[in-house]
Length: 331
Image 1 (cartoon, rainbow, N blue to C red):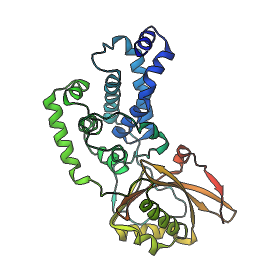
Image 2: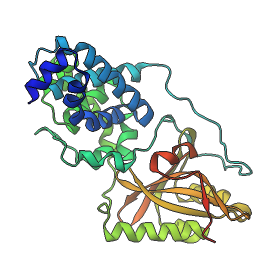
Image 3: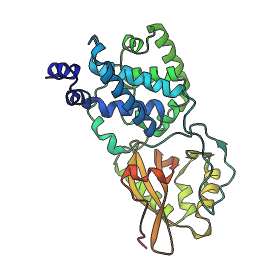
Image 4: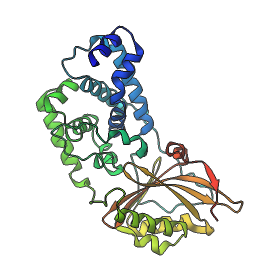
């Protein structure tokens, strides 16, 4: 069947080509996301990959599998994007009538975006090579994807292809038009760079332990209970809000930020969703008119029985999670 589809696709049959590449589409998009840290950029890179594959199918000699060939194209498209100067730039704070406290530092990965779990569902049975070192859930976590953005383009390509997907060193060398020695050297440097960025163990997805923490967070946030909220945070909790570069590290800094958010009687409703295999919420600000307006998407990172990070993304991402821009208030 695959051979018949390949023959038809080489002859210009677009439907046959789509049938050939469809089994790899979801995993290729996640691959591009890991490398680029942005779902929008990942989708662009995926489209470029498929166009290049369609145009280059006649030159595909089948020395490697179709999957490996597609990963080669996708990886090199992502490398070009990583080296581009046109990555999304930082934006100014955009919450009306709220003046944030002085940030602990300014973040650099301002192009980071969440990845809806609905897009991860096709990856449950995605193949991993024997040399893969990361579990599927860990390899799409916000912390891991953010850490990848701090590596050089070649380092991130090598680490993802070797340690996440489990390709052999010689396969990766062929994909990158490099040598096994060069790939091994880049992998060593990438592993060393990520060594101190390993997240603490988190409760299992959908577990009772995760559910308990999430329920407490929702209660504290919706009731603007600052003391209860702070008690849920780790000592080194980290708050970020790409594309705004402000970052707050530590409980005291987080408390100052949350105090500003809750100031003047502002109250919120949270609508649960999931992103990057983590608990997430659409956040809505209640108004006196019975309507709650979307203020962004929150993603929680858990460590043990505490919250180690809260990442806030802007309102433009609500539709990605099937969430409205506004909704009738529950109160």
